[in-house]
Length: 121
Image (cartoon, rainbow, N blue to C red; front, side, top):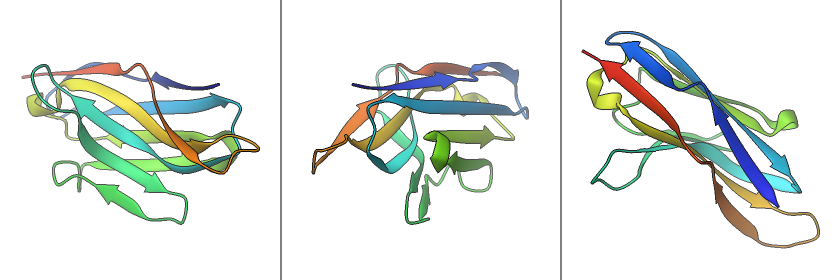
């Protein structure tokens, strides 16, 4: 089985910064994509930023210029540095990864349990 474990959420004031981290553990053959989504109550989960193993990065419009995603492929981890946070960034942030398990030809999408980010005004 594969697990994604997030850390780094919390409470911060407007204009502050937080860094989220996520580590994938378990039976992992290869990770194709790894990134972050967020969700607020009553709304759909939305993309924040995702890294593709060929080096491509995709940011949401709200994340561009403020958030930076990075990874350490050897450790199967991804981080999200979030700067200049505002109350609209308040959400539960979820780690996501497309993982191929050893011996299998297909990829499966996994989610972490989420970490709360709250930005006070």
